[in-house]
Image (cartoon, helix red, strand yellow):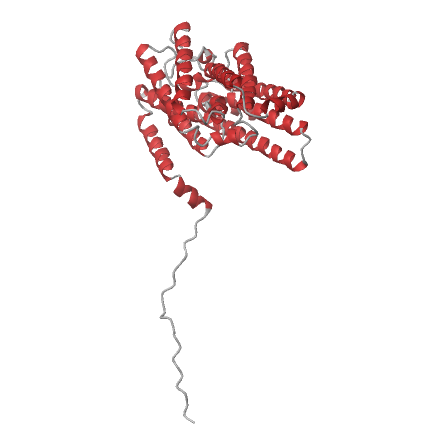
Amino acid sequence: MPKTKKHAKHVLPAQPHKFVKRYSLVDVVLQKEKKFLYFIAFSLIVAGAVYPYPNIAMWVGFAFAGYSAIANDSIQTIGTFIGSNEDKKWYWQWLFMGLIFVGTVTYSWVAFNGDVSYERLATPGLEKTPTSFVYLQLASPIILLLLTRFRIPVSTTFMLLSVFSATSGTIVSMLSKSISGYFLAFVSAFIIYVTLSKLIKRFIKGEAHAFWVWAQWIISGFLWYTWLAQDLANIAVYLPRQLNIYEFLVFTGFIFLGLGFLFYKKGDRIQNVINEKSEVRDVRSATIIDLVYSLILFYFKEVNNVPMSTTWVFVGLLAGRELGMRLRAHDSGEKFAKTFRLIGKDVLSVTIGLIISLILAIAINPVMQDELKSFFFK
């Protein structure tokens, strides 16, 4: 019997080994944020190039501070406004808030002889116009931009004002007032949402009446005014304490246009800090938050002229609100744990910002370095 011929097995030709490229989380973030990181690098180079020239450095520092404050701090006041008005055109929101800004800063400029900070920069340690700059003073708002990009609600007050403070006593006063603001906001929101939670829930059911839309726009406008009276100092700290007409127009125009960009971007990354909280997209809930926040800021505005961190007040307000809602609803332990994680994350964020700002302030200011040495090495 003849042998059957065996067919040759199909053998794939040898090929060189292909190495699979593995991407870490850092690689993904770097790729995603490439353009922004290029901008940060370019800004740091610009800051290094101009800081020896005070007349140029003050306007570059102001531009960085204005953009970072608009992107970070202002979202506390208009974040709920943006979140609950997603159905409205961005340019109507911008014109409404922008014109309030123009009116607010114009009043301060006229009433306080060229001062646009509502005399917040008259606080001892901050009252002198900077005549020279160091690199870290121009870099601090750029660092703030970087932290903001990664959704960290850092206190602009501490990040920007502490690097200009002449004494540690000024920072202690700001910190004391900010901590008081946090606890007052936390307790106020907690009590309101524990005692009135059922009533608030009844208001929030169904479609909002047109009254709530008008009420929210009015209260948001009042909140925006009280926030500006507190935080304009963070932007104006780089500039002369009394602005002439041309300086005032540049100051006002830059921030007005920056607000337009913020509304166009719908709050950008930091808006997620607002959106992850319960029911802030509802116009009625947003109105209640804004009302409590505006009253607290107005109270501290009238207490004294010491600047304070509105970020700490806002974080305290949201924390008290979340905890009060959970307690009143008798939620499960899992939901309580989630609430405490949110509270802890926000507190950690503002604490990180405080630590960074203190490190920058001590690195810049020889007076603080001497005070620190005398404190630890008596």
